[in-house]
Image (cartoon, rainbow, N blue to C red):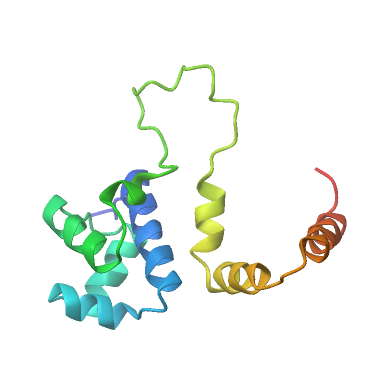
Length: 135
């Protein structure tokens, strides 16, 4: 039997759980212990392999100190939804949460925010944009 691909919403919610957990410097094991689960189950939630039930999502939100709505911010629209709002041309903010869900993205963001000088931060952004090249 072929493996079913994770639902995009489940994947998004899982990546937001991972991002928030990493922001708090919490291990998968610690989150799993707080939920009465193994770290492998937390891993499956974060990858979107396993769907998170409503009561469990509420528990995760409490542990990670965010409202449940946090996990759905920037979520992809489901097919058949109201995608024809004229805003479908706008890029999804999901790339930001995907970036922040990586250890490099989180580390870079934390370090960047510790730079006191706004002029220096702006120069770093300019440098990175130059290195990356224009789109």
